[in-house]
Structures are given as structure tokens and as C-alpha cells.
Image 1 (tube, rainbow, N blue to C red):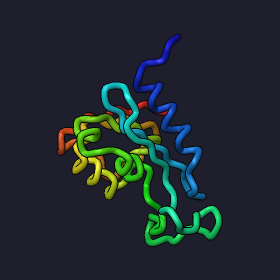
Image 2 (image 1 turned 180 degrees about the horizontal axis):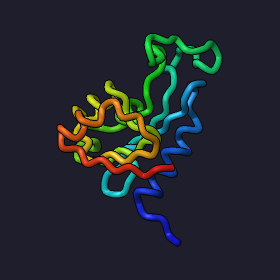
Image 3 (image 1 turned 135 degrees about the vertical axis):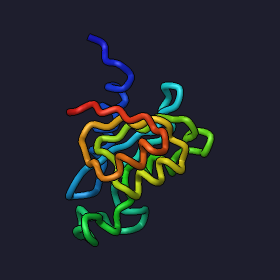
Image 4 (image 1 turned 90 degrees about the vertical axis):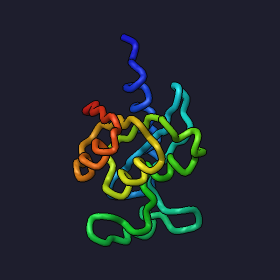
Length: 135
């Protein structure tokens, strides 16, 4: 049976997560508009900094301070026009910081596989459609 678009793009997000340099959780994200991928991202250290896989995580609370999250990396690859009204596909539900950035970037729809429910109300309050496709 042929996959729908949401399953197809979520599969790609899981492939992107395979590039993660985080030894705690591999996350992948895509920004898609008009069935075209505009940006991809995975969680890892910024260019030129050591990867957590090599030197360990720099933890503060529940977050590594050295890591840029997959959602942010995917959004950074897109122009404002490409982000506006787009759908984000992400392997894991966004944290609070990423949820706020997704809202500000103009994303209108979020499709995710694994729960991380901290920021759910903010996304809904902002009018973002949320779709859960469990894996």
C-alpha cells in the first residue's frame, strides 16, 4: 500500500535523525511546504564545536547546552517565505524552546511521532495544527 504524505515525510525525518551527534536522543526534523522539503535538521553541536558523541554532553537540567535542536537547525535552512505556512515533521515532540521558535517562524502544522508533551498548549494556543503519528 502506498504511504500518505505525512508518513513519507516523517520517515525522512527519522532518516535525518540518523545524522545526530547527540548520544542521549537522536532527533530529526523537516520543514515542508507544498510537498517540497525546504529544510532538514538534526540535533548536534554547532559547526566547529566538538560533538557530544566525542566529548560528552554539557548538561544543564534536562538539556545539553552545546546542542542545537533538530527543529532549530531545520528552520535555519529556510528563508522566512519558505517557513511561513509550512509543515514541520519531527521525530519527537518539540521542547518549550523549540515550540516558541516554531510559533515565531510561522509554521502552521506539526507532525510528530514520539511524545514530549511539555509545550503542547503553546502550539495549540498559537493555532498550529498538531498531528501525532505514533511509531
